[in-house]
Image (cartoon, rainbow, N blue to C red; front, side, top):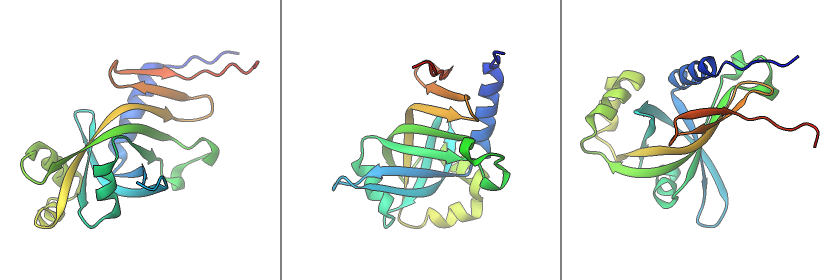
Length: 165
């Protein structure tokens, strides 16, 4: 029996998943070719991700050095029914350092999501705002439910594997 995938519902679920998340996992390749992962608080505005990172954080330098990074959002383990099919979204992103001045729409989003009081404090410190522009991604919501995300075309495409091979 063939199951029908409702792409409109999948898109709504995907967007709701992103809205629930407050931190993002960042993956890099160091100048020595070694993998490096970290996490940061983030906001999403106009289909781009933004992180606000201290200059002393190891991933600050890696955000500046890498042309492409991977980001990952993962469902909370406490509510995941099957850990082999955890809801998650992964993106390849182009990072860009925006500095610490201007971009008030982005900082207002941080105030709303992460506390205005916290952001007022952080803005007095050595932090920089980075814009992460998603290039392509994949959203997984269960077995046989993986979807490639094309940001240029604004599409979700069901990934289907030919099991006869």
